[in-house]
Length: 177
Length: 125
Image (tube, rainbow over the protein chains, first blue to last red):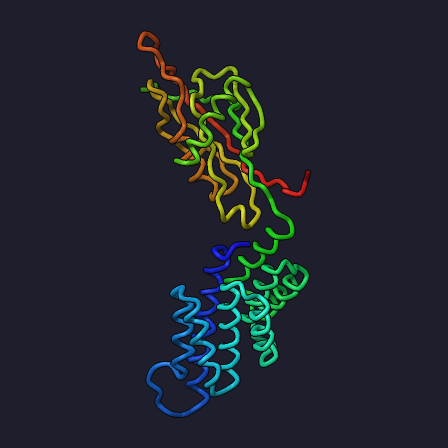
């Protein structure tokens, strides 16, 4: 399981978690906020999206230390989980995902990130459970198909083959060149 | 093109063998009666989305072959899933048949080829 296969999915999850985090702030406090509420979390997510994973993790950790509410912490830990998974720091990634899910056990993106971590760790029953949680919480999650495919590829890999059959009768047609 | 190059020697070997299955997951059944003899049979790439979603299917593509052995007027005649059509057409376009000598007439007949896209359990053996 190399990182290249997981990277797009993780980046997507990072961007969505961040968007949810900044959107959630607007209804929490009735004041005008210009730009993201937690700049470090936003910059961290942007760095992760841009592929600068180490910087993304650093900024996310800094953002988490200044997180104003539970919603920000959930998004931050979820992003941290994704970033650490990209760095193959799987034990720490798992801790971050678990932390996010302790704060919000209905955060499907954290389940999704944790499922990826479990897949990387070849812990397939746990991955299957988390994929089921994603499906239950967000049946239309765009990451679901990819997660299921990764899981299937891991537990029941298939080899594609092509049979070329020239035995069919040729059809009469107009004059060839 | 890399795939084409990969299958070229294999396809030539198939011509000699008639029909066989190879390590690359390509099986070819030859038609003894057809008038144009395949020279370079290119196998289509299995679409990643189909592989991912575990989709199998068949595509029958019919086409003419010019004097030099190049397929033209390539069209899908039957298809069980559209996801396989483009790879099948590309494979036909990249394939070649033996040229017809100058002193012989080019057969006025359409050639058809069926691609059967299949998935096999890797854990079968």
